[in-house]
Image (cartoon, rainbow, N blue to C red; front, side, top):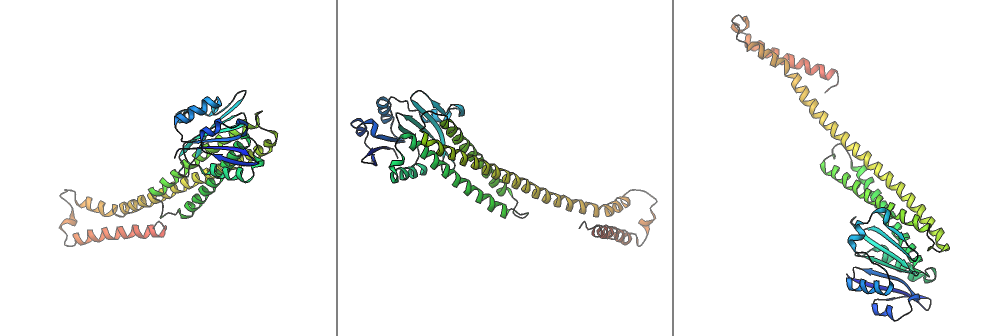
Length: 314
């Protein structure tokens, strides 16, 4: 749903307006954050003209290279980042910080944005500028990423507990592969935030009181990267275990066929000998030739079975 939100300071409170015209008739210094959620191109163009900024199209945000996701000029910071949705789809989000006003551009409803609105509304004095809101948004997003990693860890643990020789099938391998892909998406998403926060730490636009918070966020991100690496290692181990179970099952089948083949080798040999068209074969004219040959086949098979059991191959 298209939505425009204008957050501004008034009477020591952060207030909200949804009217673009409101921006034009109030002091620009009072505005803190302008949030554009899937708004019309006409609204974006008006804001670009009024604030002297450039708002990227969604396709531009998606295609931009990792090294160019953070751009800093003499008066503006532009950050492009991907926010993961609950279904692990990516929503490109653009942050523009100019004249202490934060402009955010997105196309999806994001829980991290709702939580940030609650934070700044509860403690307006802690968010005097758009830079403070930007840090709060990144902090909240990292918290959500931590929740996603925790949920992923629980799924991996459940999968590990259910992985048995009997349960090793194609569906299980597909589930492992799906978790691996989601873990990689989480890792890419977190590293994306790490680059952004590292660049912000070196920026002159960041107020001195934001430096400690940015350092804490960076430490949290480093911890999350380690957790993701551990989760990926666990999935690799589960995949190897699954393949080991598959090999065990295949070896069992091959073992059965091998045993059956070996058991029937002596009877097959006996039958082959007496199937040869030689003239002088005394057993063929014997009254007991047939039952003796059958008995030999049975006895030879039983002897092999006894040998296998003695060696504990059966």
